[in-house]
Length: 311
Image (cartoon, rainbow, N blue to C red):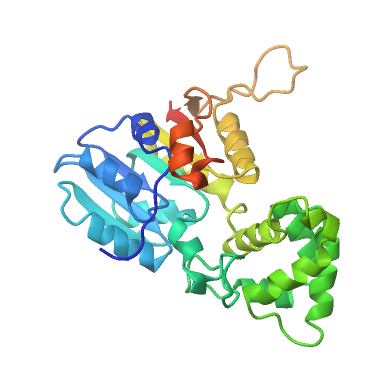
């Protein structure tokens, strides 16, 4: 087994939410090490099918090993879930029974220093989930204007000191490029006032999150990908989405709510004339991990699972 080891969050709740049919077709859009996918596959018969998508070649390799002995048909695709419709078309699949998105970043990506995701380890600025991509964290840090950096840090990191940090970065790179995570952390540390740093929490956390989201376009593609997923479901099919921070959860909640909405006529319209029908029904409220799961896996603490069913 490869070294790609990731502990899936809300595993039992997710499988229950998908309401798996043994002969159905299921898509894991964020395959990772196949933690959730392995559980899905274990409930599928030889007539069932699992399609796993991930843009990280290490994840594909690990999932291939983990799913080698399952009974169902398995198709693994190295791609971004933004291309879900094209992937299903290439596979000759017109509709599926369930789709899972486990958003955010996997533990192996954080823990592998050379990937450049962690502010706790010094490594080249990278942060690409798909290492075939041209844009990296180095590109963002060294080529974006101070105004662009400010916008990214504020929007994607909700960083209070966004403008000041961006200005310090712009000043630093006048003399030399910022090439490593350690160099970037040092600049951020100087930019954030000492009294703020003393209050707890790593000063680089929000900036690193923002850069990662920008590099991988995590939020810009999310709403469209969710809509495509709903369109790919057959009637009664389930969509399960796990989020890890408020920005992505806000998008998921808003998108699912809109797709579950019926009439979209203006409030002042006395009688519905739009004929708009809901595409989904929302299944319960967002699920959070138990205290026991959070104790066993601290990275699960911020997770939320939202579930919907195709009408």
